[in-house]
Image (cartoon, rainbow, N blue to C red; front, side, top):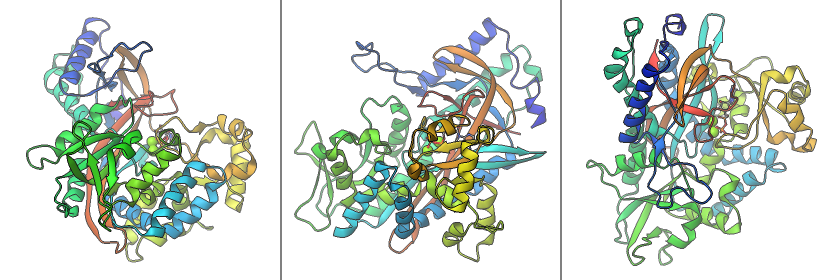
Length: 514
Ligand code: ADP
Ligand code: MG
Ligand code: MG
């Protein structure tokens, strides 16, 4: 690490021409290669025809990342995929956790109810697809560097489309632009791993598409991307779509706003198989059988403004389409699950919940997972929860922690002294719907971020995400596909608590291995 965190890397650029030149190269390459987002909506509408794109925020240089940490994160991904497939199959385990947080969290209760409704009538599709992303930060303990998991995403894991493009951008700069910098002789050789995240995620979708097989009703088959209205991160999603439509697979993909599910889809009544039919808006007589439904929406309460939105989710869940994810797989991604996996039962023994999902003979896998855990505590009324409540409400102790509700998408957590302040606003019997997690403090790095055309230079914190794709049978547990699928590096200013790019805190980055 040391060689790349010194004054030489990333290099100090001359203010003015040199910085402008590099920024200009990034601006143009990004638009030319779809490393872009839609502009934010402006009241009155600056883009009434929806034709504008702008650069995704990005670092000027790839950030140094310890090779051993990067390799460890990649190599454990298929174990994580299989672990979360097992968790998703264990409705008893998930149901207990849902009960524990239900009082303080209607959203989770409503999701669980969708599962129960479909279970009562019987699931017609037993295959489940996960497009996962496991997120880490590097934790420094003395000289030792170790990846620690921030969270595991089981729904709408984003930026797989843009992250591959960011790797390509930095490779382009390394070959063509950095050598022209004034102190380029001081630049260390960069080691930029190949990152085919869009291809990897598309391969997961294709595995599910192929496993479903042909339409028995004689319709053409398709993949649906369920999206949010007004989505700005649309090119990220399009990269996956284009990878699916490439000449080797050529799979029809349609983008369907979550709010239009009931209008555009129906379930085939004449068949007990409950095929999901998609009716083209431009030509409603043209019907496709939707065989995979990929959710880039539906992960938070905002997408369920009324009862009909829940009916829409129920329609997807009870249909024959392979949902990515199903309700149980989405629930497996609750922060509560991560906490229960990480909390040891007394005297430092391996967490019992983890033992439940990892076969006894797989000791190496178990230890590999344990190495990536950091301390996470419940905030319930158990002895461990009582101790955590004491830490969370202490004005000094709380500074080591982040408190998280069961939410996705960024911007939902409480940090340090905001923890006791927030706890004061909720009844104590609902504290159990949050978890308390030790803050991971990565080694200090610097970089420059190009955001909205402005350069921000300073200390940064990097978060590595590893994508994984998994297709399994909920009933038998048979795994049909299990792959690691590329990576994401997100970087934020070290004064910012949150790191989400879409939430406006972080930016795209790539690794140079050191
Ligand atoms: P979300 O599902 O909303 O993305 P996360 O658990 O990833 O929630 O938290 C959001 C952000 O908060 C992360 O991207 C990271 O920047 C920061 N964060 C979360 N947990 C920790 C932690 N234990 N240590 C340091 N930062 C954290
Ligand atoms: Mg998340
Ligand atoms: Mg996150």
